Structures are given as structure tokens and as C-alpha cells.
Amino acid sequence: MTENAFRLDVVLIHYPVVNKKQEIVGSAVTNLDLHDIARAGRTFGVRTYWVVTPYQQQQELSADIAGHWTEGYGGTVNPDRAEALSIIQIRASLDQVLTEMGAQGGKKPLVVATSAGKACRKMSFQAVRKALEEGESVLLLFGTGWGLAPEVMDRADAALPPIRGAGTYNHLSVRSAASICLDRLCGDREDGG
Image (cartoon, one colour):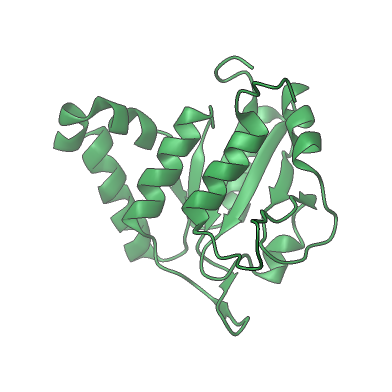
């Protein structure tokens, strides 16, 4: 695929997510998540990296961090970082993201969730990649904390299968999971698959 030949957006949800006890909570935005997912997103041709938090202070912090690298001194000393963080958009809710994406593309995107746990309506990486190759707009949902709340999972059209390693340990950071998913969906396949 050529650069930006597909219509893929990524959203990192900070509320509603679940904690260790499966309670609905909000989580804090982290500098690492902003930088690393933006860099992976830009590498794999993501159009927009949406950061969703309803908390005003967290929105301001996110804007300050991104702004330092896109409009401030950071961008002048590191233009590559500026380019990566330029894809960040901050919104208060998933509804806002879906409304804006629908307005841009004329229809609702295919909403695909990610989860380390069991999820219904599974859609393979290969099937989502095919949808992208056929020009479908896809919104890929990632959750912070211990994952997306059930109400967010219920809004997804499908869910990717969990990323599994060699053993039973399965606690990837959201940054690592995003990079793996983006590579599987958009990466150059040497083997043609």
C-alpha cells in the first residue's frame, strides 16, 4: 500500500474504561501514550490519532504536550516529532469522534475495538486490512487502564482478536499493542500476506 492510501483513524479512550476490578473509571493521559502512538500512527499512515478524555485538565495537558512539539520549540528542534504529533486531535467523547468522522467521510466508519480479553463479533486482522485496502474508513479503538468499558465494546462493529505471545502472560502496554496492530493492518508485508 502506498502512504495514506487507506482511511484509518485510531482513538485512545481514557473514559469509560475499566480498572483491575472491572469497575468503570477514567484514566490519566500519559506523555508516552501521546508520543508513541502518534509516532506509530504516522509511520503506518493513520489519518488522525484521537485522544478521548472528558476531563478538562487532561484535555489541556494533552494540547500543551502536542502543541510544544507541533507549534513550540520542540517542533523546531525535532521536525519528525512535530510531524508525528500533528495527527493528534483531542475530544471529550467517542460520540464527538464518530460525528466528525461521519461528516468527513459521508458515512459512519467501521468501528473496530481491541481487547486483550474475550470479545464477541471477532474480525480478523486480515479482514480489517482487506476493508482498508478496499477503501473503507476504519476507526480502531484502544482503551487505557484495564481496557475498554463494556459500553464502548458494545458500540463497536467488531473486535480484533487479542494479541497473544508464546506463554500465558498477556499484559502489553497500549503503546505496544497499538504498534503491533498497526503493523498487522497497514505494514508492508514482505511475504505478500
